Image (cartoon, rainbow, N blue to C red; front, side, top):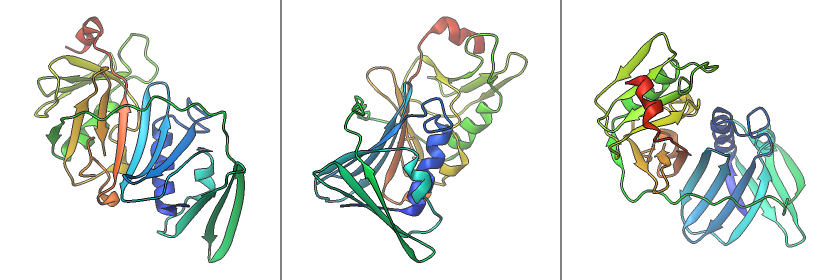
Length: 252
């Protein structure tokens, strides 16, 4: 049996919406991949250019199943009340929780056709920043053009020297004084999950670069660590980036 809180389901659903994963996003048929083992609990959702992963350390029994993202809308809440998932060998999963003190029981068929994505390995090292990096990403997003007529105007440029640059073609915003563990100027799609208020934190925010060129940020005292309410747990956002210097020069 796997147990999470209703408030975690609410937070995860909000972050997934900002990442474009879920019913109203660019990836409406996204699945939550749930797994537990002796290293802890993982909830992971993948899209074509973004992965959101929640990790909770601890020793759990071995379990693995997938659920449609829309299940989160049914079980979410503002309380720490538990939601339990009990998967059977017959391919059924029983979901139990309480709504205003009234026990609720849902039954879902486990979708065995959902593909298991190639989950990214976390970087070995990170560059640590103050919590100001998270709010700076949000300010940069507000400067981009979400319906651009020129390539890269709907991107953020994170420069190896520590700058965040964004433009809508008319105005440019450059914020400096940050640390990134790369030397190039990297372009990131302007995903609303970057800097989202749901993951505001007073904890350090760290950024790392995957070997295939994807940047990973964990959001608590998180790696792009910005979820102060998660305690020792970690919410990780991995976004595909572009090293195209010709495109990057638009922001230079």
